[in-house]
Image 1: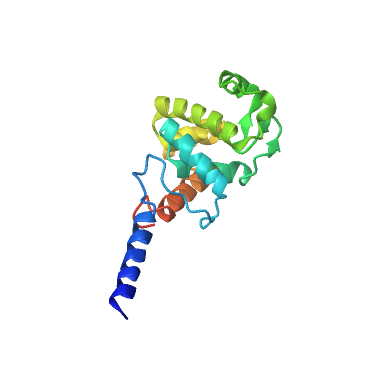
Image 2: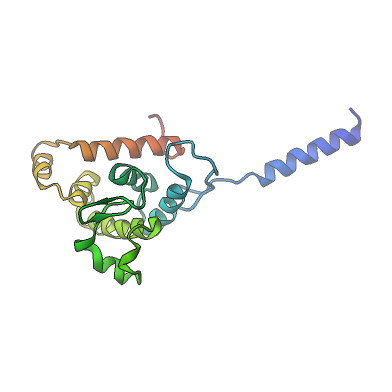
Amino acid sequence: MSYLNKGIAVLLALVAFIATPITAKANSLSYIPPQETDGVPVEIRQIAEIVGGEFNICPELLEAMACQESTYKADATNGTCKGLMQINTGLHKERFTDAGWSTEDWDNAYKNMYVAADYLAELFEKYEDVALVLYYYNGDSTNLKRYKESGYLSYYVKSILEKSEELEYLHGRKGDF
C-alpha cells in the first residue's frame, strides 16, 4: 500500500471517528440510534429523553410506563384513561389545557407523556419513593396499603421497575443487569 493510500485510509478513519456522536451525561439528551434495538419505538424513546430531561425523570421509567400502560400505543383508550400513558382525562384535563393544548390531543404521544411526567414530578416531589409514585399514579389504593405495611410490589409496579432497569442497562446507564 502506498503512502498516499495509507494517508487516505488514516484520514477516512479520523473523519469517521470525529463524525461519531458522543453520548452526553444520562440526564441530558444523548444520541439515539435510528433503529429500535430495545423494543421501544424510536419515537417513544426520543420523546422520553426530551420529557424526562425536562422533568428530571429517568427516560427509561417513562418508556417502561408507556409499555405497561398502552404497549406504546398513542391512541390507546381504557374508559376515561387515554393515550400512551393512559392519562385519566377527568382528573388531568386541567394539566392538559394549562399546557395550552386541546383536550382532543390525548392521542399525541409527546403531549400525553408530558402531562404524565408533570403529574409524576409532582408525585416524586411529595413521595420520593418510585414504588409509591407508581402506586399513586396507577390509583391502586389496595396494594398501596400492602406496600406500606410489608413492601409488597404489585404486578403493575414490579413490571415497570423491572422494565425500567432492563432499559437502563440496554441504554448503558446502569451496570450489571
